[in-house]
Image (cartoon, rainbow, N blue to C red; front, top):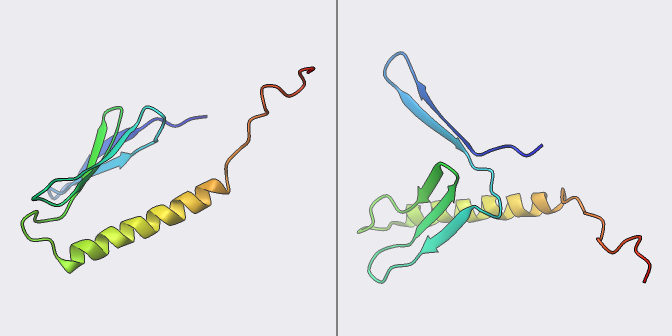
Length: 100
């Protein structure tokens, strides 16, 4: 069963707020990296009613920590892809069982 993209907002008794988003990426999801001449890039993910943007904390002063965080993101994404590939289910070839 496919799970939908969901968002929840939690309000805590002492005033804290937490937003959780679960992106269930599909062929209709929008993923892009916007490149600018004078500003750092912006990475965006959108699906249904959820939009997530990843960017440097201060676009006028990119730090080594910003780059380190981007590398952590890339490393996590590479591990995600490698593990996801081990779980791919194959669909029988449409021509299977059809006489040639």
